[in-house]
Amino acid sequence: MTRPNILMIMTDQQRRDTLGVHGCDWIPTPHLDRLGEAGAVFEHCTVDNPICTPSRASIFTGKPVPDHAVQRVHDNLPPDDVLFTERLRREAGYRTALFGKLHVSSRIQEEHQRHRHDGFDIYEWCLEPSVSIESPFNGYAAWLRETAPDFLAALQHNGRKELHHPEAQHMSTWAGDRTIAFIQSMKAERQPFFCLMSLFDPHDPYEDYPLTFGNCIDAAKIPEPVVSRTIQPGCVRQEQQGSYLGRFSDFSAEEIRKIRLGYAASIAFLDKQVGRVLAALDEAGMTDDTMVVFLSDHGDQLGDHGLFVKGVALYEPTVGVPLLLRWPGHVNAGTRCTALAQGRDVAATCLAAAGLDTHSCPESEDLVVMASRNATRRSSAICAYRNSGVNDSGSFWDPPMRATMARDQRFKLTLYTSGGLSERELFDLQTDPQETINLSEDPAYAPTELMLLGDIAAFLQAEAAAAAPRATSSLPNAAQRMQNRIK
Image (cartoon, rainbow, N blue to C red; front, side):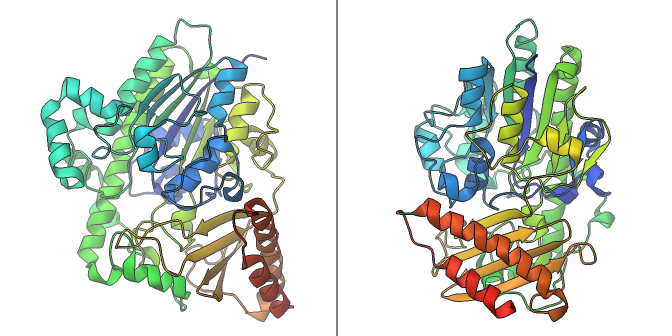
């Protein structure tokens, strides 16, 4: 078997409906659209957790959240967990490189110490443009010291308040440049490579995009936020009052439109960088020998449902992300896969492509096989929020908020729990794709709700077993009580 090169491109906080291949008509993404059209577009990819650190820990270990124990944004991946990149390097002889964000552990941990099993030969880390600038691992800051010390000083002084980063000095440009240089360096090598180009955009604060890219967005086409038509669970209403971005009611309609425009401009800009990298693959004659994976770690509410950024509310803008896979000769161009993919499936996909077994991540599935069969082993996709994010004071929620979601091809059920109370939302994603009408406890949908609640209960039971003796979860009992009520 010839081992392919693997190019993995990740964005941060990009929702699925921001690509043309997913029907978006207000953000230009020509390069990503061509990438999707040349391979497989996964229409229902769900993240394992809606917060960066747990989601990325799942992506790079191939494990669901309970199995790696990274539940919150400041948690650290246990030292014995192995990223799939380590197996590619150690067992398949890959040359491995990181340019940008990893975030499988907390910022403080990664700022000072690499994970011992991260698996990267080249490790040019950068969590985001203006943080951890003095970290010895920060490749972007090192690049700016050499090429643009004045801009680096501005980032150090202004932090996230430094707006509209120049295109030539932008973190996405740096990541693109470094990825291109790495591809060129591997052109004459017989060794296969794995390269992770990991961008911070389109993550808030939404105004770091080069100013000219705001002109790429037709403001008249920016959609208005989705408004729920039924009363939302208490956890969701609490997040509306105090997400880390602020209280939703304090933002004007114009301020929300400005957020959406900045988010869109960042995506248009990162699409350009992706185009540069794909062109470099073409120029190096490596396209046919390289598997390209594109995905994001979670999405962004952007004002939909009265919410910002991401958190306990497991609506599609947060949990539904783009996932594209191109591998000439192995994945047919024009494939539209409706199977229930998850972020953690990237691990098994890369390991299998390299000819390695996937026994280390049995809950991860090969996306190449999934695309060819348009089928998956799982009956539903699960997303689990475990008091994972912080509120507007920078603290974890007290009492803790938890949410567990199960979705099949058509329906999605979320169980919210906090302070001993449990509430549910059930949506028909076929007739109500914007999730505005809660069908939970409607007798007509009781069989569907019971089925999905069974999947949630099974997940919670497995979670409790994985957590013992670290913690004891009362949620499986709560889920069982809910099942009994529906019966």
